[in-house]
Length: 78
Image (cartoon, rainbow, N blue to C red; front, side):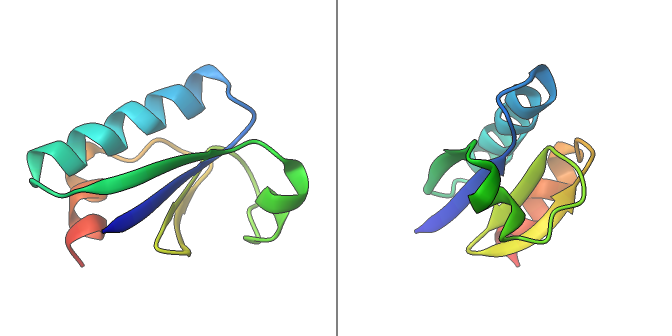
């Protein structure tokens, strides 16, 4: 099972990123655990320059923007 982390303070962009990631996982018929990370110390451990950030299986794949559902789906399937 995949672990998907949404890094950010819980702002509107963080919530949108989570929605896009969930939709991508559902569309790809993948099971994933979604974790919201709001603690700045934990976020900074990923070398994140700006939020929101997306981490899939401990690999930072996106930061500072909301990727498309197709992009997220490609990362989930990789």
